[in-house]
Length: 420
Image (cartoon, rainbow, N blue to C red):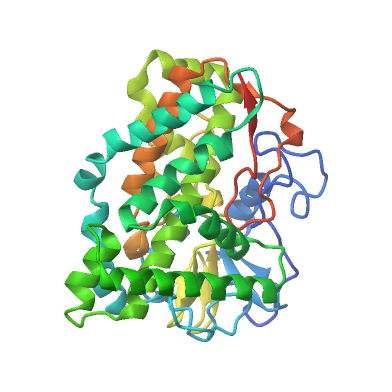
């Protein structure tokens, strides 16, 4: 039997939840795996030696860190682990919980409130409805690629030219948000997701975004459009099921989640295939592999590096550790997706991997990502189009000069200069 981990003495800081400090494809040559080296090797050590361990949080408190696939699925699938950020013990920056409850969104709630609110937008992201958007997503992608082709011979930032505009345009269209405002919400989102800015600057960005969304919802209350926010106003707000602040919370959640994650996955996926000519050629020769390749890329990169997070609402034993009521938990999604008891040779990209879809990049349980079908279609369309139209695409700078988002909660590339 695994020895029970003592919960009374916080362990020393363990930072493997941070992303690689440089190129995501080759481990940096640092001796200390935990502080500056390869986090995937560090996760592997934790999975085998201490799958439920302790980590220090920025305020000096601690939380449990789960690294094993089975334990992570057990935690995310158990509603006794709460997503309610107002509960004492929820690991925000520390063990205190609390905080402003306005515009927090249903992902930070538990049933029944979470269930009630999520159902209001579930239909908008069902597979059949999202598949109907595929031609429009293809059209947008082709237009952006046309613009790239007109710049042939000069380096192009793939993030600015394609990876960011596609999901931003699509989510703006779905929500009824003017795309002309994209620079505003991208700037504010960047500050909210930064791990390096001061708390005062982050709070100022949160306040500015709240004011922007408040004005947006107010305008749409006067003239609801045929879009997600318009339908929420007509079908739920006007019937008294939700109020103005609830609609603004939906807008904040869907706007941020709807472009940041997919944009960064597009950039990393493109760079990965530029570095792996055999996989890229295999996909060009057999486009039917694209859907499975997207699942493998999602498994391989796992761009959500510091979560999801939960707090125990009762004493629960997981992986031999007793997690007591009020203790916070961080689940290491990148570790679960590299667990060699589930994925053979997990540190190798295999675009034909038969069980890649079992990854937990979109989470698991009742909080599994609402927009995963949309993200999949966007990734499938963009990756297939890039492979087809730019077969000689390559980085325009050495990989070590690419600015990776090690300073952000969502990993990716700040910029990706390419040529062809």
